[in-house]
Structure formats: C-alpha cells, structure tokens
Image (cartoon, rainbow, N blue to C red; front, side, top):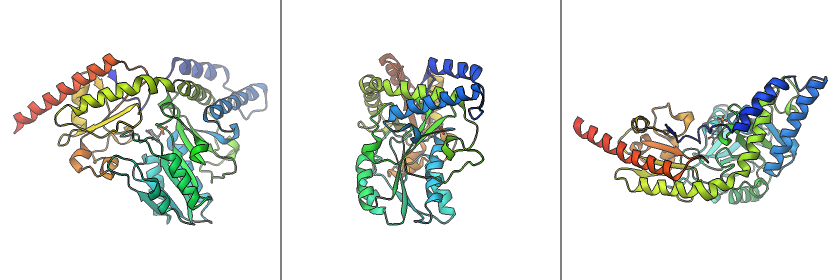
Length: 383
Ligand code: PMP
C-alpha cells in the first residue's frame, strides 16, 4: 500500500520514536517536582522550547506546548476573544479555515461575538484588502491559515498582516501554520503574526502534541486552569516525551524543507498534470500552492467511492481533510471557492511526503486512470 495522506498524519522520524521511548523510560519525573529527576525533566522542556524558538526565529518564552494544533487554535481564538472582550467583540477569519478555528469562531458567535467570514476567490486564495476592509476598531483578532489543509492554497500572509495592522495596530493576527511549516518559508516577524499554531504529527513528530507561539506582550485568557505550567498559559502536567520529540521533529522537518522545495514540488506538478489529463477529473489545487497537497474532484461521484477504489488498487488517499472525511456533507472549502455541490462531494486529497519517489507518482497516476475507468464502466452498467 502506498501512503498518500501525509497532510493528515506523517510517519514519525525514527529519531522521534527513539526519543519518545528514551524520555518516557528515563525522565518520567514530574517537571514541577523539586528533586533532581524533576529538575532534569524541566531542563528537557526548557531545551525543547529553545529548539522550537530557534527554528521559528522567536524567543523561547514565546513558545507554549499544547496537545496539538486543535488546542493551539482554540487557545488562540477563544483565548484572545475572552481576554480582550473589554476592547471589542469582533473577529475576522476566512471560510477556508480548519474546523478548530472555524468552529471556535462559531462557538464565540453563539455567545454573542460578531464574526466576519472572508470568502476566498475561485482559486482558494483570500484577497488581503478584503480582510483589511473587515477590520474595525473593535476587532480583536484576525485568523488566517498559511496553507489550506484540503486544497493546499497558500495565503498572502505578509500582505494580510501589513494591511490589517495598518487599519488597527492593536488587532492580533493569528496564523494556523500547520500545513505550511517544513514545506514553505515561515516568517513570523515579516507576517507581523502575534500567534502561530503548529502540530507535531504533520512534521513527522508524535501525535497529540502541538505548539502555540504567543508573541511577548500578548496575554490570552487560559482555557485550561489548575496549575502554573507553560507560564500560566496552559495548566496540566507536561507531556515531557511528546515535547522533547516534537522539538526534534520541528528541527528536523525545518532542516529538510529543501526536499519539498527541490524534489517533491516537481512530483506534485507531475501528478497534477496527470490528473488534468484524465477526462472527468477537475483539479482544485493550484500550481503555486504548497508542494505537498494535490486535490481534485470527480463531479458526480462521491469522493469516498473513488477513494475506496484507489485503496483496492493499493493507494491510500483521503477525501478532503482527515477531520471531516467521515462527514457525508459537501466540502465547505470547495463551496466557498464557488464549486458546485457535485464537485464539493467528489473531492480527493493526495498529500505527498519526503519519501515519495517518481516511481510512486507514476504508479499512482496509473491507479487513478484505472480507478476512473472502472467506475465509469460500473456506472454505465447501472444505467
Ligand atoms: N489546522 C490544520 C490546517 C490542520 O491540517 C490540522 C490537522 N488536521 C489541525 C489544525 C489540527 O491539528 P491536530 O491534529 O494537531 O489537532
């Protein structure tokens, strides 16, 4: 079976697995304990924070370890809204966001906050001036993702940050960076980002661990209380093995970015060319999108039917993003780009990893041809 679902979960680096095991066995003490074991565990977290800060070009005290990007995003959106409600109760986000941002905003809306949802263009890109035009004196947060997890489009964060801050310099700018880090350049200062979320398992790190960058000077209302861990931002005994292994994955995947730039990006292009040449398939990802995500629709055919057929042919792909793939509803992201319901129901996401080769891509291309052919024949037979 060839695995094409790296954007949902990337296989961990061998070093990550070894680190997890070693830290779990050896450094099990509670980092808050005052004895030597606790001190050592605390030192490991300190070192991990320094590694992540260096990878992102920020200060160690600006890095918070979480249970994943779902938590980081919830913490950024709701933590900012709750903390700054005296200043205003308006947020701006996009129709493309991951459910952990999208539904955090929906929750706030139910509680009385006002949310402005910015629609992307037909390519899945948000116009910076549209975002900035929505910003008001009472806008406390703008949240825009770096790379869309479903179709791989890249948002113009530098321009968005610049224009938003020009309208209201006090508005916080949050970036969900989960699908961009390790594949594209990250420039938190250049984007003027105040908050930035990462998930370790997309970077070949452990599952259930994440990072939130909180710019020095920004205070969020803590969602988890009951301890002074993570500089009072997040209570709870730290996941020391997960934190140390996450830092390793952040460092290693950051250093490996050139693999995606030089080797995987041309493979992605090749795959997109193959898909574009198969009658009936409609490409939704863009040539200038992230180097690891290819997305297409087979309008009239449910994505899961094609995905099952591809699995029979030895290819593990995804229908849109993992978090929503068990839903039978049309993709919100594709609808927001103006695609019709048939296309939005028939989406397939293929996500590449650093281990994929030209031969893999060729085999996938053949499987795609065969799957579409088989489904067309089956469909014809049913009529
Ligand atoms: N944001 C994006 C863009 C994602 O792709 C994901 C993972 N599907 C998340 C947030 C949530 O990350 P986690 O799985 O670590 O909770």
